[in-house]
Length: 174
Length: 153
Image (cartoon, rainbow over all chains, first blue to last red; front, side):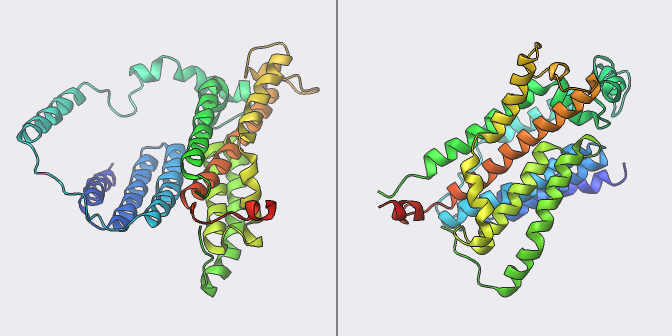
């Protein structure tokens, strides 16, 4: 628990820095470090699979994609001028944040075994995964067996993303 | 189009790092049922190693032949995933219900194990191909004629 507060502060700092900085290549690398800090937060919460994906995709692949895109354009954010913040946003966003904080008071505590998420169907997966699928990692057995339909559609989404990128960007010589 | 990198340090390190990254990706993919990881992460690591090969040696180099070949495999991973589901249908069950995979001399739990492993390989192939494909698309230069079209003329 003691390690999470510095990590969360780092998260806010890197997220703000990625927006504020003018040099877009620096922004990409700050975004990568944001993903890395987020992966550390997931790992400290015990969600190692999510941390793995965040570190590999957020800090690795997404950074490369951003950089490849930047090399096709310009690196400096010269044309975008940010307009002054409207007073409605200055007033509305703190109110929204206070409402969210107020709502967060009703959330169950971390790791609460009587919360709705822990009593409905999770125990069945946890108890039967090894017996039914010989898979000790319950995350994998839920993703690939109990909920394999969702994963199938996700795979279709990834495939569609690749096809769409190829169709839009790989136009033959004009 | 990405030009090959001319630094000897980068090229030498690439020859060392890329095979290790690919081996680690396959390890994460196969070991996903016993530890953190799985098809998605393994596929992304394999894709990252191939993108590294493209970035260091260039797309036309013999060192990145795997990345060039894998571009023809678009949709193969989806076919593997849907094929496992289709095998379950043929076995008399529901789509992606691995109890009906009908592999001889395996009990039901082991059939689930094999089904999970096969679909994970499908996801990994799909993610790896898509990652390399998006990287190649992003670095596509429309003023440059690809080699295939030159040889066809």
